[in-house]
Structure formats: structure tokens, C-alpha cells
Length: 80
Image 1 (cartoon, rainbow, N blue to C red):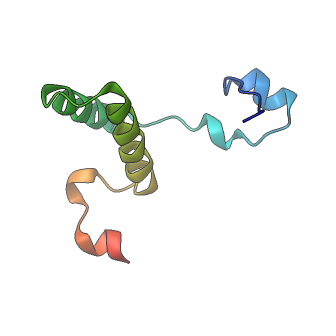
Image 2: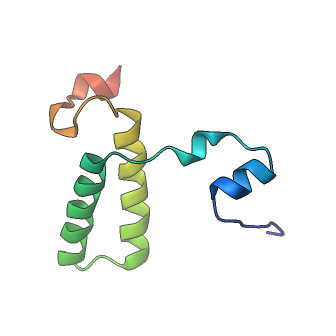
Image 3: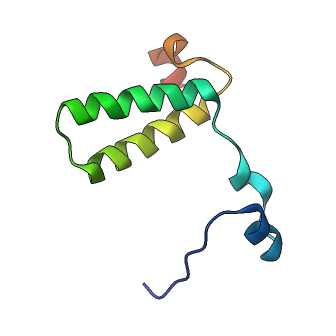
């Protein structure tokens, strides 16, 4: 894949005139939920690659519904 990979630092975003969207921070509640989820997966002996993939998918999901806490999400929220 002949591509360059750079860290998403503020300096690099400014240098390459990229959107500041990448600098959105993850709320503390979401970070704790992801940490708990990672610990659960580790206790089930999932591979590190799987844990990383699942955790990032969970982060994307929770950030999409960010204003609403995860424990208040329902099937209706996800379907609509």
C-alpha cells in the first residue's frame, strides 16, 4: 500500500491543512466503558488484534451517539 502514515497531532493537521475533526477528544465516560470492554475481552482471552478492532468499533459507535449515555441507548435509537 504505498502510503505515508503520520500521527494525528495538531502540528501535522495544521501543516497539511486537514480538518480539526480528528482532534475531537473522547469523553471520559466513553473511555471508561471502552476500558471495561477491553478488560472483559481480555478475560475471555481474545487476541490483541481482535480487542483493538472491537474496541475501535465500540468507540465509533459510542461517539456517534455521544450526547446520549450508552446505558440509555435502545434498539429504536440504533434502528432509526
